[in-house]
Amino acid sequence: MHLYHQIPERGPRKSRGAWRNFGFTLIELMIVMTIIAILIGIAAIRYDKVVQHSKEAVLKTDLRTMRDAIDNFTLDKQAAPQSIDDLQQAGYLRNVPLDPMTNAKDWVPQFDSVVLSPDQTTTGMVDVHSNSPRVSPFDNTPYNEW
Image 1 (cartoon, rainbow, N blue to C red):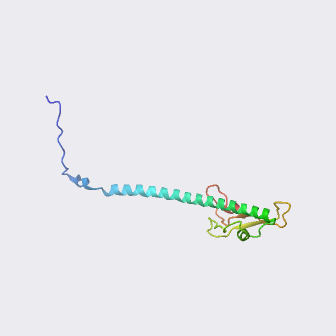
Image 2: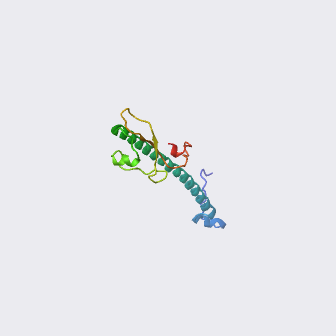
Image 3: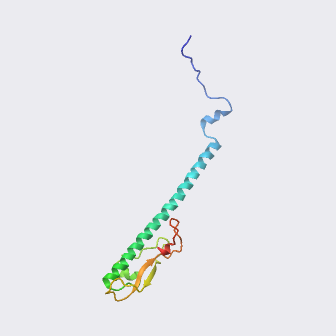
């Protein structure tokens, strides 16, 4: 009695499915293409969200920079600026940034009669906002209210 059985080696199939050893079927390729398309769709949606989030971060930074420049101008000159260009001309801003939501220098200044110090002689611009009427998808507030 033999302890080992010999398994006969199988040669290439000579039946209908012999051609399958050399490539993929159309169905297999379609399934792979569908999976790739789904993954690309998911990546595109995530990419759009990342881009929108980065635009919002730039908007917040630009607003903070311009508001600090308004305050510094007012405290240094004892008079509020009358426009955003006043901040640039006086050297408080290197240049007026583009609004990332509108891709233009169309900031909306807010004027008020508030004074920052008792020595302030004139009132003027106290704040600045985006000109975009769109709403943030992350916190559901209009950009022009930031």
